[in-house]
Length: 413
Image (cartoon, rainbow, N blue to C red):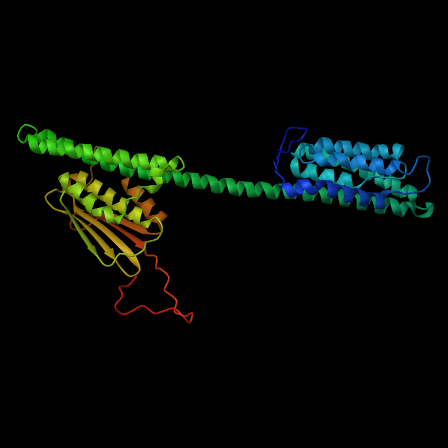
């Protein structure tokens, strides 16, 4: 569809009317023209043939087909047509076409163009007042002047006000939609930032630790150094694979991006093994029966554990194991990562730290409907606790329509 513009160049509302509205527009204008003729045409004998007035009326409604595209020019043409009716079609005072043109200007145009349209329509309203006084008996012309002037002014101002209010309503709806879109874009950018941080920071931290360890034992134990460098290569390949998958999703889903599964709690064993290979002792404890999580919660839980272990690789005391507890409870999943931090490292920033790890974990937990608690413990440890709600599957329905109670031997869902 074609966008709406005004003569002044100030566009307030750009609409794209639906196809059925465009198709029915000629029929609507034809009916409006017939109604206008029946109301505004005084068919008293005149000097012109009777067919002149209907033809002239049709010519006054044809420009309205373009009222959405050129509102103000169409209104000025319609008003000029109404003023010329005194000469071309005496006894016919066009009205409805001017009102429709005024509404289009009030709805589509800016303030300056709308005021010009209001003044033009007021000129035609004044013409209606003159015609009404001319048709009235001499004894009641004063009353006819007052009534027609007040009524015409009220109608013109009402049409103008309704058009401006409708335009304001559309602008507000578009503003709300734009704000919602901006919030969605901001949320998506935050999600991308968190993913990039988790993928890159985790891989780079482990690669640096492995490379540093290999450098220390390169001459003493070449085999272990070579194994550590091999792990660096594996970590780099995995990081590139995850980045490729994420970029594929951002480019509207390649086949690989769609088919590759996202990391989840089932991958914790692999994650823990990588950390152990990097020299960080990790203990993993999983209790309870796994069940369905809220959408996005499993990925968030995995990323939180990953980030907590990445931070532990930078700050934790390597003489003591990092404890990872995954507890499946009847209504929630609780993930806890606890490590012991040496006193000299508790308040110092690590060179590999990005400063966004804890904030990213909080945002992930909140986005998945969970909650996160982080902080030092009285015994010198550092604890990260994340809790996510579980999603219960629907209970099977019995043949009589009632839901079947769960069996006593079934695990809680």
